[in-house]
Amino acid sequence: MSVTVTRRSNASTIFLIVALLAVVLFVAAPWWAGRAELRLFGEFFLYLGLACLWNLLAGYAGLVSVGQQAYVGFGGYLLFALAIHFNVHPLLIVPVIALLGAAISVPVGLLVFRLHGAYFAIGTWVVAEVFRLSAAQITILGGGSGTSLPVSVVKSIAQSRSDRESYVYWAALFLVLLIVSISFAFLRSRQGLALTAIRDNEQAAESLGINISRTKFLVYVLTAALTAALGALIFLQKLRISPDAAFNVNDWTAFVIFIVVIGGIGTLEGPIIGTLLFFLLRESLADLGTFYLMILGVVAIVIMIRAPRGIWGFISNKFGIELFPITRRVL
Amino acid sequence: MQQLLSIRNLSKSFGSVLVTNDIDLDVPQGQSVGIIGPNGAGKSTLFNLITGVFPPNSGSIQFNGQAISSFSSAKRCRLGIARSFQIPQPFSGMSVFDNALVASAHGAGLSAKAADAAAIDAIEKTGLIEKANVLAGSLTLLERKRLELTRALASQPKLLLLDEIAGGLTDKECQSLIQTIKDIKADGVTIIWIEHVVHALLAVVDRLVVLDFGQIIADGDPEITMASNEVREIYTGIDADA
Image (cartoon, rainbow over all chains, first blue to last red; front, side, top):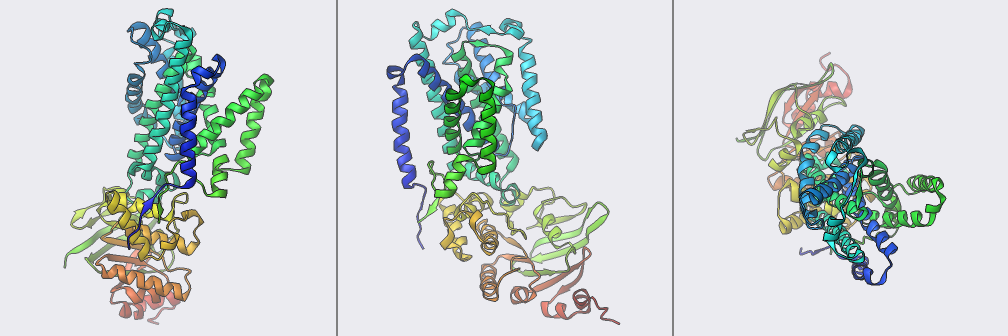
């Protein structure tokens, strides 16, 4: 019997068109959006990137890290160090920072992979704290109080402020598109099939020939590299870095976990929906101060109880649709 | 005859309980072996030792002439040992086809096109083709048991370990399962089958091994073994010599 295997569906084709239109719109944003919107979009992309990566790590590989701020801060500090003391163009060194992020994640990974489950989570957090305390010792980068990017470095990106902000914005857009594309391509690949199997059942995956620890380690290193690149852009946008901001567990992990869990963990669509909802809530409730955080907490609890697989898990369960064509269908 | 599987002095204990007690077992290429024994006799433990879920306390396992005791489960699968789990372990969020593809791509190590074909082939053999695009999590218990067999087959095994795959089936379902396993056997796959549904086992196997308290207490021709005193004793609880 001859059969064809396809992955495309109507939903995924429509989504592709909508996504392409959105990309065109966002690429052109510096010409139609105001300064504040541009900054908001940039931040949105960077959070979306963090969420996609944490989702790969926790949602697929089962590695619940609460220490990804280690790589955010590492990337940010590396950018400042290289730009200030080695006089390199800040945007051009982002790929180098990703490689160095991968390099540092190998020994860190070898250490934390000795731990499992809750111990792994705490272990990654401890590592991030060690990173933070180490960064506070670097006196040439301002020690505990941090430092700002010198005007000469800022000017090296572009002479005018609006040009510089556009470049950093495009870099963030490019990076998040890269992260989503890499996640998508990875999940469609042979390794991605293995990773999805690990997500669903580690015992069965192992018994069917999948090298679980190797696959998980690969995901850990990949996400560390891209998280470091995101960290570099986050602090290039802020122009100022300090240990407490760079290695902040709230900003770079807790909010990201919130995004992924409410959006739908273990799906590619989940982080996108979660980031949208997070920014909607943040922008509409930010004036409420502490109440804003309490409302976030209530939203998270309600969704975890009513739809444990998140908003996207609920939708895809109900309608059986998939926006990113990953599942193969036999015709 | 060439021995595909060769087990020597294999022992495993959990705490003070000796679950596998100095087992020797040779299975030649192409043979179908049934294993019976009361609950807790160490049948599933034997499978877990062969597939490397946990290491033995002592003894050796050779597969295809190679000592495999130090290999991971994944590596043993890639060498050609596949199993079905007694309690089905589906990849719930993946389709039936993707479930089989995991086995053909990673267990059998086939490349894209060949892996697709092998997955489809296994799904057809086990009668799940109508469900190929359904998420494994939505299958019924019986379909999940078939999926266990499907995945094991898709990994292109030399040795297939079946763990209570006929339990809970209706007579008709059982007959079709027997036919499926006979076909697999006819393809030259060596089979070891743990089963409480003895009539299903007897319809297929060439040899019957009886386990009790972690030891092999009978081994040989299925009909003769079933009629032996040891087996009657275990299944009736009566001392047959008395």
